[in-house]
Length: 117
Image (cartoon, rainbow, N blue to C red; front, side, top):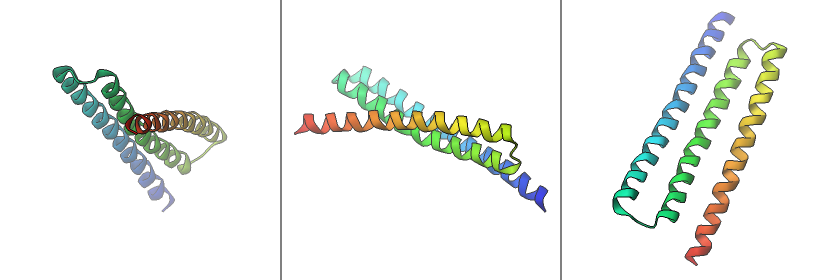
């Protein structure tokens, strides 16, 4: 029974990691399409580039959360002290990335709101 649980958890972790890859691919494709349209239309390049970059950043933030979930699932199956240490390092790195990315997104939204006023 325990082996079935472990196997299901491994498959679930792989599924969650695949979902993260799909999210990243979607965000990258969306950003690429918007950059293409920006170049063709020749709009306000500075504002639009920042919007595209921040939108991609939001997709990457979501994907990082999925990646973290997959890592937690993998470690939950058969954690050794080495696995737990690696998970802790991954959590710190990904949480730090998420924190600074979200901070930049919030600052850009505040700038956009103040420019609109």
